[in-house]
Length: 255
Image 1 (cartoon, helix red, strand yellow):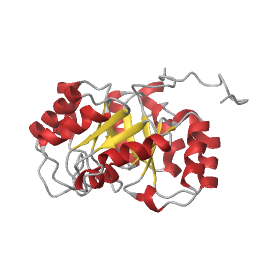
Image 2: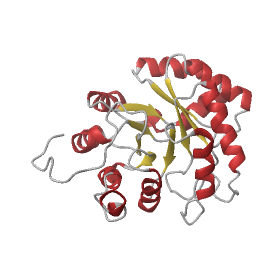
Image 3: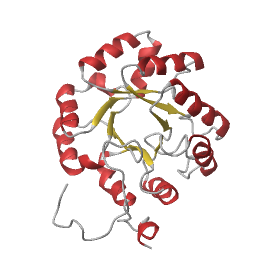
Image 4: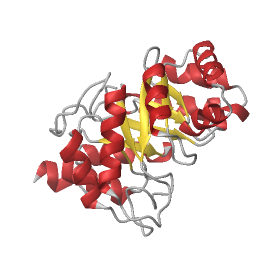
């Protein structure tokens, strides 16, 4: 994305697409095709994956046209993990697999944030889907009242990677007040550090919908930390944080 400002300021090194590290994972909360096109024109180089939130793909008009917009701009579309949970609950994983193939979707999310997916079933689901898709596995709880049981999260992450997960998505919700975060939005830093210590940083994607959360993660782990559940309106702000173009991270990279 060349502009008349290229080269004006030296910027920190940033992984280029297709990225394994430094992934930006955007949530589509119900964009129209035109909204999606506008987002791609504005920020496609900064976005790796767009997840249609929850099970919303089932009720989204002109779905295939919108998916084509994302693919045409080099951004991978993915359906929400809630839809995978529902397909599992109803015994329709094969039908989900067929639908993803028809829609030319190559990424799938496996989560258990709402339903109680037994350990063995989850491992088999990840392994089976890994044969044909790039599998993102969400770990953690959506319940902000629960204490951060680091050992449980670490075990879930390790088991998911052993089963073939491409990336681990650490639960933070679209609201940013559960999972990785306390109800006031502050970060459970000991939980984050436990995950990094056990699995490394490269394949972790931290759901971080709030600017303060995004800035904290960039300051601690650099421009190529994986960030997820980014709202479309925030994508330019997030990439600015990654490159020290906002006051929150400026001195981290230009000090």
